[in-house]
Length: 168
Image (cartoon, rainbow, N blue to C red; front, side, top):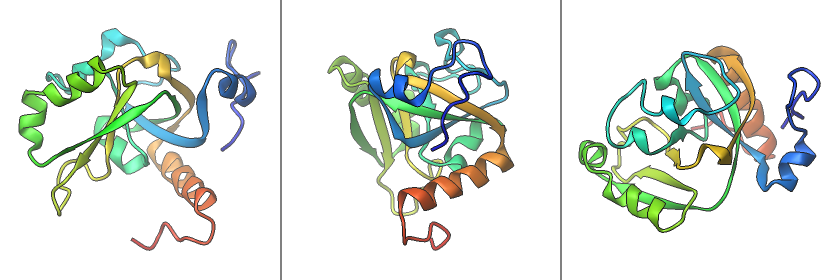
């Protein structure tokens, strides 16, 4: 992943600083919005899609496509902390009653990976990750969706040498 441009935005951190703070800088995740920003604001949680689940944290995805339902400005983010995986087969029930996600938060996890257990994966494509404390996210950059999609493909190629992310 590219080094965050520390000089371009006042107060931005370098990759070395982020690693020292516990961020995993080897993997980029994506968050989309209709507004560009560099700090997650808890007051904005669930603004785009208000429901009991979306108010629990900020949602990110491991690829651009999974994030685009929330807006067309895609932010590349780093994540820190420990997480757990929650499989579900009824997204409507999960959204209405996110008790498993609340239990993960109360158990001290920093995030939960929401994995669609249905064979056709109808829920939003790839796994979604809800990050409970926005301090565990760091925005690296913001791009329009086409630029971000190209960056995502390049990132996938770098993370899996010899594998073709195009072959799905």
